[in-house]
Image (tube, rainbow, N blue to C red; front, top):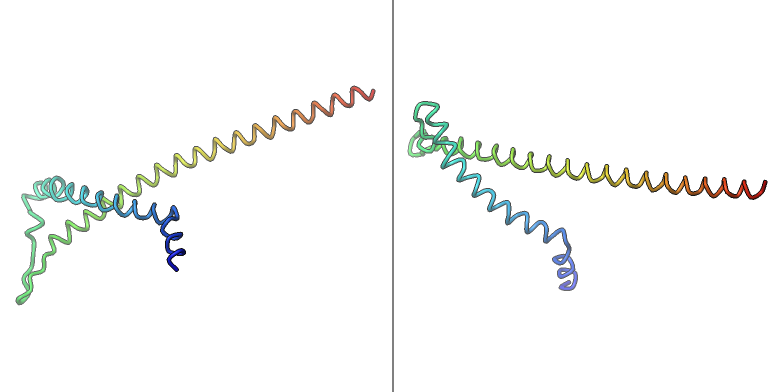
Length: 128
């Protein structure tokens, strides 16, 4: 069982996942700072000086902080937009590379066919 676990951990997918989680956490902190320190104050100014973190409703003894929810929702939308743009760029690069590989493969096949046709032509000339 230990041997299987070592093999599982050594797989590239697990390592890639771990790196993704670490980078994702760091990226999340950057986006949170962007939202809390830059975007939300600007949005608050545009909307008349509203500080979203202070928005709340008190129901009985409970204080519902819906301003924090608004900030978290904006945070999520920014992260989702960034990930969408990164995946779109990666897909574009990958697609371009696949197209280039396909063109090279076709060119090689054409060269092979031309070479074969030339050999056939030369054999036909010899037999005449």
